[in-house]
Amino acid sequence: MHSGSLPIRVARPGRFLWVACVCALVVGIAAQLGFSERNRDLMVILGMITLVSPALFHASRRACLPDPEARGWQLISLFLVVALLLQLIRIPEHFKVGWPFLYGPFPFVLSLVGSTLQAIALACWQLSPRTRFERLRYGLDGLMFAIAVFFVLWGLVLGPLFLGDRFPVAVRLVWLATFLVYDLLLGFTLYLGLSDPARFRGPLGWLAAAFLLASLLNLYILLVKLSGSAMVPDLPGGVTFLLPLAYLAAALSPRAVGSSVRAGEPPHMIHLLPYLPVLGAAILGMWLLAFGSGEGHHPVLVWLAMGLVLVLLVRQYLALRDYSILSQTLEARVAERTLALEQAQALLLRTERMNSLATLGAGLAHDMNNMLSAIQSRAELVLMDLDEGRLPNRKDLLRVQEATQLAAALSGRLMALGRQDSEPPRLLDLGEELLAIQPLLQMLLPRNLTLRLEGSGPMPFLGTRGMLEQILVNLVGNARDAMPSGGVITLRCRPHRPEDGPVGPLLEVEDTGTGIPEGLQAQVFQPFFTTKAPGVGTGLGLASVKSLLEKAGGSIQFVSRADRGTTFQVRLPFVAKSI
Image (cartoon, rainbow, N blue to C red; front, side, top):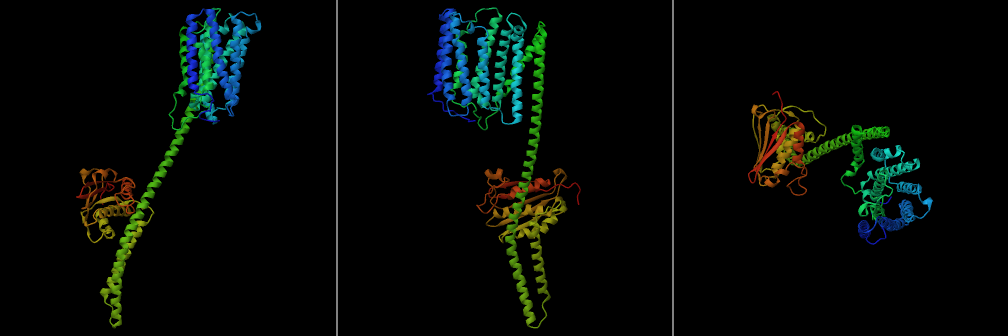
């Protein structure tokens, strides 16, 4: 089924429709005010013929287009032929020509044939919802609408008509069938349009309006008949002309019948439409229970009410099932998204760990080169002693041993930092860990930077050595980059105080660098944000530190002033009992 606009071969169909509406209004008002009742009836008949003819013409043109919707328009064209015939046979009746076969139930039978053609046309357009669940849900909505409307019609007019004896049985059956057919047409149209409300902006919406107008027109005629009037007066101001105008608008619509809704369009209030006649049926039912006369049509209303309640119960069950399925789907998606975020966070931490590892590796290579030079020089002294026949100097051998042990310790710490297996948190002392990590941090700094440690006493916290190393490597590395001309980096630690609340020891990393501009301070902890030159920083360091601390139960904040340096304040995880 095509969606969107249809190339109708009419120049400015909207203007043509407006001209037809204005002409119909003028003719209706003129007939109402300036003609006798007999001539007014003739003017209405001629006006209906005049409006049905262009509707038939344009529907026939759509039926000739090479489009999948052409079959439906062929049937609509046949219906309009029937409608035109119904108006034409009113002319001899108006002039009282004695053709008996044109009177009696023949017009009603012809009207039922036209209604059947419209129902088949709607089915030919293949507008049914795509999924079985949608077909069931919107089918129940259409059925609920039809039952509620028929409940109201039966309670107001059809019950007294059908169970009375003022009209022959055949006439009563024809009236009942007429209302039932248009009621079902409205429910069927609602079923086809609810799955995609944009369809009501095109021909389907105009056809629904035509079905509603036809139902109201038949209701008006029936009410006049029940009042005992022999002649049915035409509605004032050419209101009768609205029915052919609706079919003309459907034929002139530039949209295809199966127009699709645009992506991202908000939900439509049209989904509340099936419940409006239900509200009317409820009000009528309560009024009949309170003030009804106990007529014989009440049992029919009871059965209709039972059917309506059954449809409502099934519809609400499907709504609850739909809600349950959506809730389960949403929970599954939230779980998937949470898992994806956790995996992304773990990847971020590993990425920053590797970045820190690369930074430390460069410093380790420099220190390793110094240690190897020391080992080589001591080894040369030992060889000179052996060449001269002397025993090697023990002091030289001890220097070689110290250098190799220091190199092994530094490379071991580097390997431990790069290890990806998780280490369970344990009780550590911040002062002791800082002394152990100091040689590792010293490798990050050039000769024009000084690293100081301040603080003493027991400072227990719950964590891992790898976590503390990664935090300090990132913070000390950032402090180093903020002082390209040299300066002092101070690691200041303070034990937990009772007035601090349930927090661990405080670790401050202070530098004497350029500081962070005030306009950028709100973005410091955002992933991929960096003030370093392209290719120098990843922008993940502080984000990974913040994530690592929050996951462990700690926190981080900072104070920075331009040209006066920055101080990062790290609160390590709290330990209820001291060491």
